[in-house]
Length: 275
Image 1 (cartoon, one colour):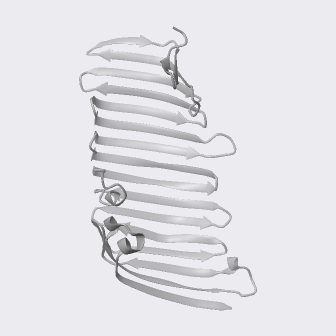
Image 2 (image 1 turned 90 degrees about the vertical axis):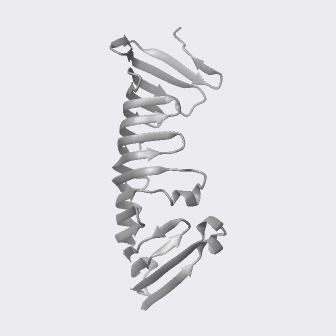
């Protein structure tokens, strides 16, 4: 039999020198422990091991990490993530679940972000502020997976976009047939370039080649718009959109059209085949 125990520590490790990226200049402090055993007469899937990674207070670029912990184990071809908690002063990621050699996945996650300094490590030119909370799960046997979750947004701003409050809920399933993604979006006080929206509500159902949509928006200038229909050939050069419902209004007056309006979008531009 093979028995092992591994311990490693690191103090003030500079990722910038390892990754050759100055923006990753850091002082990373950690302790890594792993122990386990394997029957020499059996394949490597007989390996049984435990892992613990303890990240002490550290800095990575502009990000200050609080003490974070990762605990996992491996047995009979399955990785069990007992505890994965990584957090800085204003951000936290937690993950639990399992990954198996037979491609079976069962994971749940929760994310809280109140600053986006980590984003600057990858995209230093992007300026983002606000609060985002997300939670959900990923389950199934790869690639036949299902996922669901929700994202809450508060006071989110970039150089071009501002959202005071929002909720996005989603569910996705991948089977032998078409993948299916259903999304519900509720946003309040949205400013994007010259568009100023008081309330936005959208329902989207996406298949492999088709999307069904139902979108309504109330603008801050008292106008509103409601569009419903479907789009086809989404990844083709010529895309077709059919509006089954179009409603426009302003300050108590409205215009409605419940007949189908066909719209085609191609490299040549936008056309209306029925007109």
